[in-house]
Amino acid sequence: MSEFSLKPGVVTGADYTTLVDAAKAGGFAMPAVNVVGTNSLNAVMEAAAQANSDIIIQLSNSGAAFYAGAGMADGFQAKVQGAVAAAQHAHLLAEHYGICVVMHTDHANRALIPWVEAMLDEGEKFHAIHGKPLFSSHMLDLSADPIDFNLGECARILERMAKIDMSLEIELGVTGGEEDGIGSDFDEAADNSKLYTQPQDVLQAYELLNPIGHFSVAASFGNVHGVYKPGNVKLRPEILKNSQALVEQTHGTAHNPLHLVFHGGSGSEKAKIEEAVGYGVFKMNIDTDTQFAFSQPIGKFVDENHKAFKYQVDPDDGTPYKKFYDPRKYLRLAELGIVERLQEACADLGSKGNSIARS
Ligand SMILES: [Zn+2]
Image 1: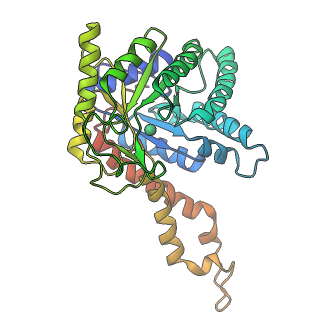
Image 2: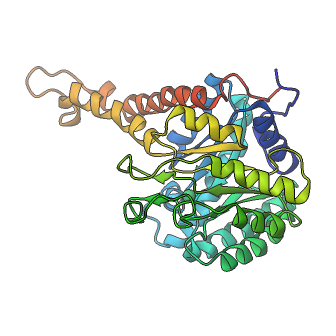
Image 3: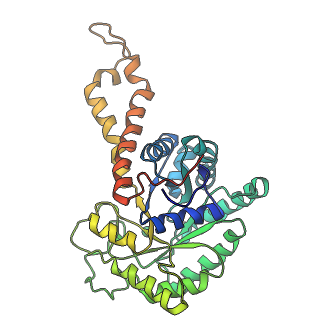
């Protein structure tokens, strides 16, 4: 059993950093799962409880808007208030699942800086009342911009976050994905800064941000977002190792001083995941796989009970179909799909059985 322990519930501030340290010391990472509503959010907490693993729950800006309701007229307010609603929901319920939950928001590019700032307005209000922030951390992904702009903005936002005990996740280097259309256009030399983060850039980030507050780094080491043709880009976890070593040697820090994050990990080889975790990765994003895990059982249920999705009562023999079209019936199956898929993810990342929550 870990020497670390925390009360169950949403963890922020010093408790959040304890959880990150516990994962790194224990040699495991936690899944970070994107949610879009109470079904997926509750299913992720149920999965974590069943796996006896602590968990990271995150919302993209569009996921947050969906949480508020896709029909809300003011799309920007939906992105902000949906995120607030999800965080409030987790603050209320997480402790009852008996595990630690990190609440986080996912990729925010340059155009979404106002979204992050509006969530911080809400986070500051919440902190003034409750003495803790709404979210454990937010992400700012300015990796498509020049590094000086990227880090300058990260420093500015982290100044504000540090005051309310929040952590910032940043991204360095471009993580390829189908939306980016990169990968095949570049040769895969390890010094290709378009595909592989340079340890020098990580050192620059550390020197600027470490004096301000707690932060984590999503570094590109050949990882890709979303569904991507395999074989185009090679995973090189040694980039993470080299980044840790450069910071450690330059500043005489303890081993693995950086808190690293693995984006676009769906479908990665287990050995490479393990290697990356050994170099200080405490968080691995899982989105695409859990979307399919949610939808697949619904598809099967509709196939098997197709009449119940056309008729309330069977037109031929009068059979009532209420117990089949009750949305709880198939939404519960979808939730269980997520629960099952995440058992595997927690086992792969080594977080299964390693929750540090103690009631
Ligand atoms: Zn990313």
